[in-house]
Image 1 (cartoon, helix red, strand yellow):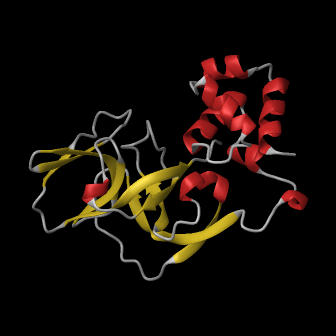
Image 2 (image 1 turned 135 degrees about the vertical axis):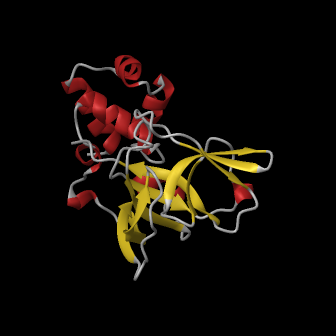
Length: 212
């Protein structure tokens, strides 16, 4: 069964049509229609998560396929840094990476980024981004330079401490790294552009959340 058909079946079983699930999930009507028609190919993982939450199912429920329908090339292996904690909180001492592991991710979860060799995965640790990326989420980070970033992008950076994930903003001679948390203890982290300790490791292009 194709994923668009599975999504339609889940909607029907729970009394939703495209209009009603669009209203309740916040995913635009045309986007829901496109996701169904294209069997979720290149769909934003954020939109997939919103629909799954509304339907009361997990992402795995929606994306899993019969093994007889799987085709070669459906997933790709990426670098995975499990021993480095990505702090979505206050920076702490950085942990040394002894070796890089790998992780296999279905192409559907990365859309246009599927198969990119400059993408690596890490896991978020903390609550300073919990309105956007919950604690323990798996994030896909695409290596990039400052020139590739725009205000509002989510980045992984370090400043002589642990890696951190925040919203990125550029203002005159400063970089602003902004949290998005339900806890008011977390505030902007502002750094001078000329800072030998500052490292921008990449832009977060996808995150994967456990719904239970």
